Image 1 (cartoon, rainbow, N blue to C red):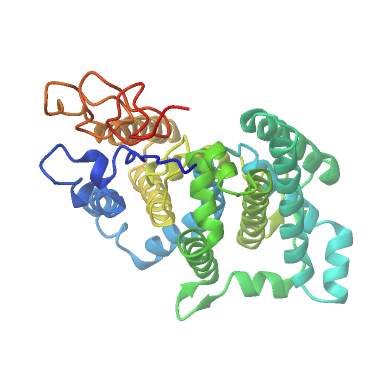
Image 2 (tube, rainbow, N blue to C red):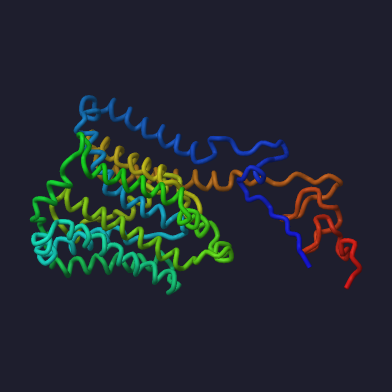
Length: 387
């Protein structure tokens, strides 16, 4: 016997958000509108910087400095975007950057790089980050541990392991080829900025043009529905944390090149900066929605804000307060946008209000029976004799 089910449009969609007038949400309510708001905010910060520090803010060297600073945390934020869209959180990214940089600059690793090629150091950093991300993913997906607790434990363990390996010492990068390559530029654009652009572009394609990206949105939106749709939620969750670890490894390589060191203090508070940039970029902390473009703009906004504060000789404490205020405002706006499209249904014709989950216009006085046509009264078998 076939069954007929009626799907209700989700809140916020064109059908669900319309209020009888046939009009869906406006253009500015979508990702384009949110990204446009971020662009406007970034332009306002640039104007403030140009007015308060004329001659210094708009200098080419200062612009390149902003981009270099944004590159490292930007790569970490791309990985964080995937994790948060997938319904998780990763508090260990800063510690993974430190651990990757330490492991890639040990005497043994640098000796191998000297005998072969500096690519050994790059591969080591990425593999260490991926391995730690794999541990995070397995503990969360198969160990059923809350992501907040699991990654908090990894934060402490990875930072402690980095200190043990380095014996609390800063390790110097000896390979000149490594430093010259990553500290160079292409057509005047720093190599670190190019790496950030490539990672962001790859992340955008992966999120928006592949099955992996669609599954990430599905898992973050409703994990149980994704499982029923045939998605292996646990395995996909593991891959999300591995991806975050890979981004941490790449960021560690960039930080090693910028500072010519590997240190257990690298990446301090990167987890907070990355989460802040992702939230500012419009990614929902509850998962299911987000954009790579928004994350990139969020990173640039925070980096530009810090640069404006430095040029105006304002304290780091004032920077922290400003960041905190911006984060709170961004989350409040997220909540408003997430619930603003839900409107009460109009009263159905005939004096009856449509029951939740039933199509508008269901017969008053009766509720639709499961498996029966819309508007069927209880006890009505749709024209068939009762069994």
